[in-house]
Length: 339
Image (cartoon, one colour):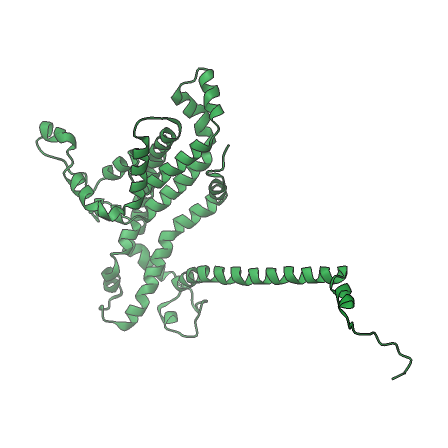
């Protein structure tokens, strides 16, 4: 090595180290490294989180198209060797899928419309009108959210089984009438804002209307509008985001409901909920496949049929989310942020 070669000296004191550490290029490189590490950690976390959520769904979709032999083949993981629709045929037949889906969609849509309208009026009344015992009434609304519906199902069943408000039906008709196996219990509860999660819907509308500027209402009163005209022409058009939120949640919760449906719709031949069918078709699958309940291979294959039925039941909700995704996300963001 030539002796005249100049060798850079390593910093020996704090002043030289400080000059290098606070050099603009070094500072920029350090910031870029931190950003890159932050993005990498964020990507790893989101990828793991999404995988934990999506993997069961991917596995369920994969097994729905597998033949019976592919289920017991350890070499088949996600992609079946032979695609088949037999699992869907069995699930559709045992669920009575199209009839059950028609009844469920009709009932869910009816309840969604009725409870959205009733909760909208109740929430507007709590937000814009001062009346006696308003605080007590609001406390009772919150109480309906706290109390599990299973605690009052039995008493509600007895009341609708022997429906006789104030004894008027017994007075004119001779004996109480039964509303079980009809849609009347659902319609009455939704129309009076007493259906599933209606207390939460009332709070959403109350908070929404409470945060709207009072100047709108005062200007309408000055122009001679009545309370109903103010609600219909001013408040209602501005409440579209809250209405979309409540309507979608109402449809979703009624579609997934099993407590009220199994209690009020007891007749399997006339009315049926898709989830109620899913919980009662175990022995029918065994009989259809021609094996007894102690067949170990069938015990391993039955969950595939059941998961296929779950996939069929979730399909309308997935399509609804894909269609209304934009409106749903926007409504969630804007509810409570008005004025």
